[in-house]
Length: 278
Image (cartoon, rainbow, N blue to C red; front, side, top):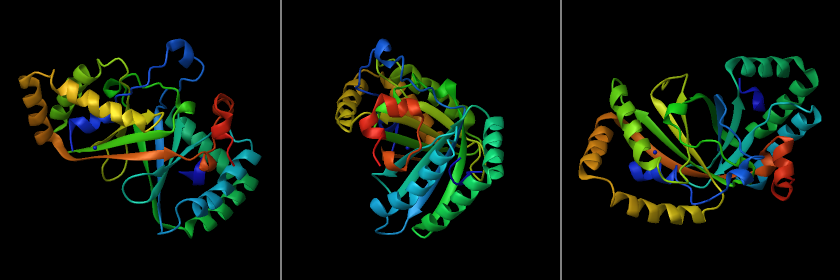
């Protein structure tokens, strides 16, 4: 586990969930990656000038340490293309018990623990701060979430904070949104709910991987067409529910960084030219 780790309105959600990419079931069968039940996200906020090669250099030490240990757990690294300069690291687990097992195994491996401590010291000099969050998968709010992650290159992530006491409005909005936008043939997003910390239970994220930024151009055209087909009653209902339950919403874009990622062997075999970059 890396470093011992232990979205403004409905159009944003559309952009975060509708893919123009059409991949047949046969093409996906070997590469589709289901969302993990537990998702730990580490965020590193970088000092000016430290994004890019300086950060890749210090992060490579973590990748080398896990590779040398042939560690069974993996993580995906991304760099921000919007908002404050930062890097995200996704670590997924089947359960909290699996997370615990990974943490304990890391601590009990003296060689790996020492290598991670050394890497952490060097990496910390490039950061202004770091933090982590733990999310649980919400299948009921997700649509066609398993996708061909090894061939994706970007992620749009929409973060929504719900006002206290407005959970029922949020549930109704989510169902209405999915019933409309989820009917699109290539719609896909994975929904997660924050499990711990000050915002526990009130923060949701919607994650949609993209193969290219050209897909966003398709999103904008699709949004325009879709809005013309939504009934006035549904539009008003969504707007009223948003006004009632949204405290904040923000969407940001991130780019995969293979040099800072420690990915499964199957990913590397699926696209060696990308994941094999050093």
